[in-house]
Amino acid sequence: MPERRKPPQPSTGRPRPSPGASRPRANPPGVSLCRALSKLGLCSRKQAEILVAEGRVRVAGKIVRNGSMRVDPGRDRIEVDGSRVVAERKVYLMINKPRGLVTTRDDPQDRGTVYDCLAELDLPFVSPVGRLDKASEGLLLMTNDTRFAQRLLDPASHVAKIYHVQIGALPDEAMLARLRAGATVDGELLTARSIDVLRSGTSTAWLEITVDEGRNRHIRRLLGAHDVEVLRLVRVAIGPLQLGELAKGKARHLTAEELALFQG
Image 1 (cartoon, one colour):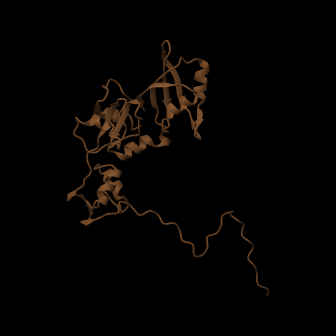
Image 2 (tube, one colour; image 1 turned 45 degrees about the vertical axis):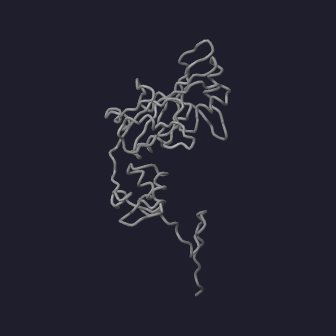
Image 3 (cartoon, rainbow, N blue to C red; image 1 turned 90 degrees about the horizontal axis):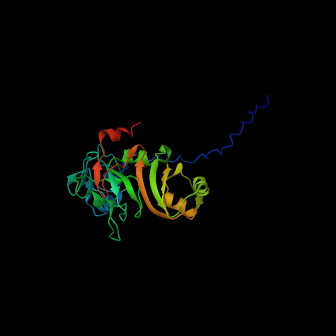
């Protein structure tokens, strides 16, 4: 009898892997050593890289000079300068950032930083949640809880941020319509959730602008695209948290009630 041939199989549209092709390897478990030192609240990742490069970090008793080595912060014994690194208590702070301070730990130009606002507090290492540029002021959160920070910074969370912005013009409905329509700047579409007039003077006005994205210098670039000069920019709220009466340049711990506002 003639040999039966198998009917052709329908194509899936996807190329078949070659017999010798290997599957992509999954990342090994754990996190990098530098990230572990940051998650444990000891220092920033950049500072961790320096500690590792200087040979000051041991894992399971052995000096490690590879900051990308995978470790388990909850199980592996990690030491810096002979002392074991353990997780610090979780800290959640709000700062009323003044103009003129940069949102970084160390500044190569030796400018003042937001850490100057923490000088009077006994704290483990904390990092800013997002940024405010040097010329901007107002509410800034700082914490050593990386999950809390990532949840607020995740674009999918759409956490609203409210700013009071003084502009060097008197807005009319035509200007507001243009601003509300947004602008494309350097290939990015910049929009605001809402833009409203707070009050007007003889030559300047204050706008309340709400955004739910974290693009770099978002509001300044949006207004600049419409030739609107920004004189002051103050962040007054992040999600349900209000800046309130906190004095400029001061910091305080968030209350349990304030933290609960972010749990929903």
